Amino acid sequence: MDWINVSLTSVSMAVDAMTVGAVDGIQEKKMPIWKVLFIGFLFGFMQFLMPTIGYFVGYSFRDALESYIPWIAFALLTLLAIKSLVDFIKERRKGKEEEKEETKKIKIPEILLQGVATSIDALCIGFVYLNLEIPQAMLVFGIIGIVTFVLTFLTTLFGSKVAGKLERWAGLISAIVFFAVGLKILLQGVL
Image (tube, rainbow, N blue to C red; front, top):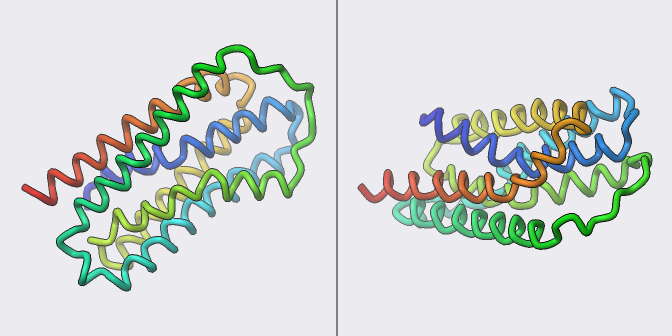
């Protein structure tokens, strides 16, 4: 198993959750520790669950897709990279027009919605790892979930210190990492 690839994917999958967690930390400056843990756990769990669902949907068609897996992975990761880059450009165009909101309480339904929204793109990551057997794939998805939990917990906890920098570059970082990982998978599969 390529641990560098797994590490890069884990961090890039966690970026959206980290950004949302950091913003939640800024919005609710005196957030109780249980809520910080809940946000980290939920986002980590969703980043584990979504690729697992994608993997098992794709696994049923594995034999038919075997030779196309590198191309599918490259296409999906390139689409994620393009989406991340477009989001980054949109955010840059907004500039400093955003109004600063007053401190508020983040409600549980809002956190649940954020958990789903930040992990929906992780469905296609399950297709990226179709070349792995089930135990190896579950290990990769578990690592993605744990990395997301830890990083989201930390960025939520220290949101007021890191959110501005992280939020500003999150889309560009995700785009570069997704494309690099996709290109690497394609080249390994083709060569």
